[in-house]
Length: 365
Ligand SMILES: NC(=O)c1ccc[n+]([C@@H]2O[C@H](COP(=O)([O-])OP(=O)(O)OC[C@H]3O[C@@H](n4cnc5c(N)ncnc54)[C@H](O)[C@@H]3O)[C@@H](O)[C@H]2O)c1
Ligand SMILES: [Zn+2]
Image 1: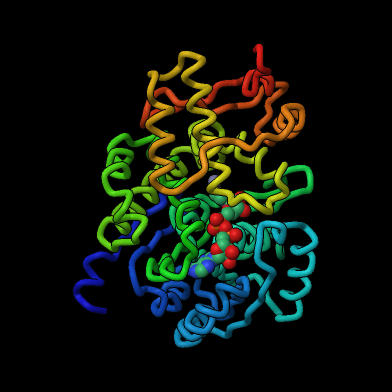
Image 2: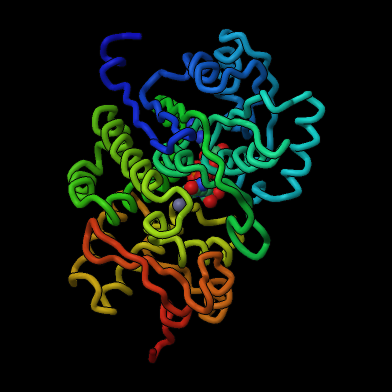
């Protein structure tokens, strides 16, 4: 590895007692994945799970690295898109794992974005009552958010992520060079979760995003790696303090309540998760302002930042009753109230128990 590369290689620890693991981050680290997997799991059999677009580009290098570390390697491919994150797909994949002779000592390797990570993680959490898995995130969103923290699961027709588990990966291995092939729209969607982390937790990061938006959208390695690392640290810190989402971790749902409703109502098709989150965040910030919970101007600042990252900021005009119905089956419902994340200012957020109708008041409400 060259000196320049070594300098930008970063490690972030996710401290969870015996479930602790490291996030390794930097350009060109994919070829050393195999050794890291063996170190973290001791496994001698790996099953890579990916989607065609990612597999075509990176599965060969991934497989080579695992084999060079002495592992037997199988590969599974599922169709692209969030519609694949479902129980039928899981049932099919169990069958494949049995066919490969995967046992308690095998490791699953999630090679892809958040969809692949959530699906693989859920498979690993449940197959043989739980086997180990490693995250190799290939989207920005997966690097900064979904690969860390152990929330895994699938969608139901009634809503996003309604079935799942907490199952921590044994390692997260993020090669930032892989982001070069990511479509620009997916890049933006990933930055939505970075903006989220900044908005709820770190005003300095928020200001940095405002200053460096252009360089970040251009994937300039210096700013990019340091911003990804900071977002990973925030996620790791929140998860360390509240692994099972009994309180603090809920803050990471900022923008997600209405965002999930947008995804559900649009059938997961036309809107990316990060785009839905951007809409949901701006919506929540405006709502926070009108409830008198955060300084006037916060929503505008958030909206401007989302726009710099080419993200949409207005929720689609679906029928209000449709929104309310979806909000009411959202999994964060406690009795008749939803733990809605409101902004208290840039860099600070809290959960408020609100009724669906308070989150989305009618024209006169
Ligand atoms: N578990 C969590 O804590 C958590 C957090 C946030 C989001 N999520 C979930 O993550 C999912 C969204 O993740 P996502 O945005 O990564 O979507 P995704 O996994 O669907 O990937 C987005 C697209 O990018 C393509 N792609 C991936 N890597 C690529 C690369 N390097 N080059 C070119 N194309 C590439 C994929 O094929 C896909 O078309 C949703 O299912 C969401 O619910 C989970
Ligand atoms: Zn998200």
